[in-house]
Length: 107
Image 1 (spheres, rainbow, N blue to C red):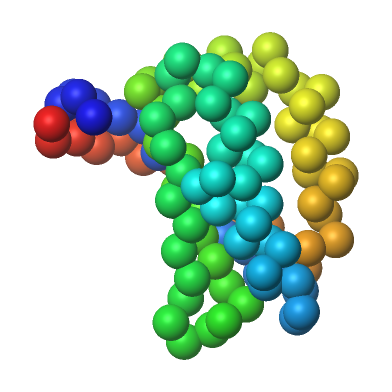
Image 2: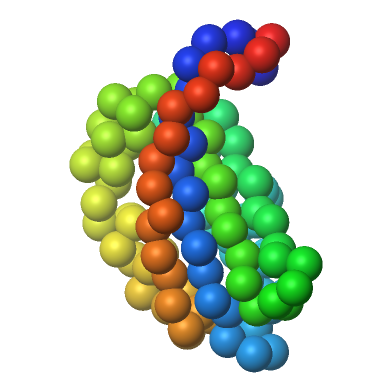
């Protein structure tokens, strides 16, 4: 990974009881969302973390080179975003975008 400013989007998910494994498979670093994002040269990686006190609470961190790269990909691929949202909506009780952040990445 190159040094420089990166952009990360953080989502919080409340997963339905019994759907944790499927959620991890679809939202993790090798899941459907990450494979979709890999269609953009501006995408870096996805991380999935699970709350140590609440097994049904997860965060995803989607790393992009720039906000502009993400926005361009999102706009150009809106139909696929909506399709994936519909396909996986039964896995979660709630999803909340916590925010987007810029940070200095080390090489």
